[in-house]
Length: 215
Image (cartoon, rainbow, N blue to C red; front, side, top):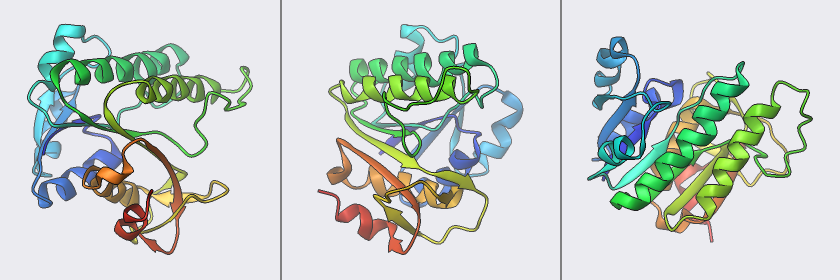
């Protein structure tokens, strides 16, 4: 597949890109800062410069045209509610709408464990802006005609990846960013994960086997 990896300089994206390339995919990692190009291209991906906060519909169409799949791994990083809404909600939704227009049918969204319109995070808590933005973006994705999968990893760590998760865990725990990168590859290659929100922690299930069992 020809894949647009949005948020290409993020920690998860930098781990996912070489795995996707190794699996035979062509990866276009979308970044804002040209100084990150060399690091991104060292993964085997093609660095594409674009500011997703300011792209209009035509710009999104140009960015995604010819792609088979979109992986959303971008995020504002918290701290600024306005920017969180602009990136995690508005830009994400714009990418989904563009993907539909140009035929980039497969879409994998990196969300978080417990993401929901009923997230219950009080408005006076710093996490509220992110929880609301992700909930709105996920809800929009569910309403599209895309072949979508929403990945819901729990708290992210820098631990070495084990290649094993606990899919469908009852409570949030933690998961290595390396394992999240591996779930991106697994989801893209398994049509059976389409139309599903997959929440997980690190665990004992081999990722491929866990995703193969999704019904």
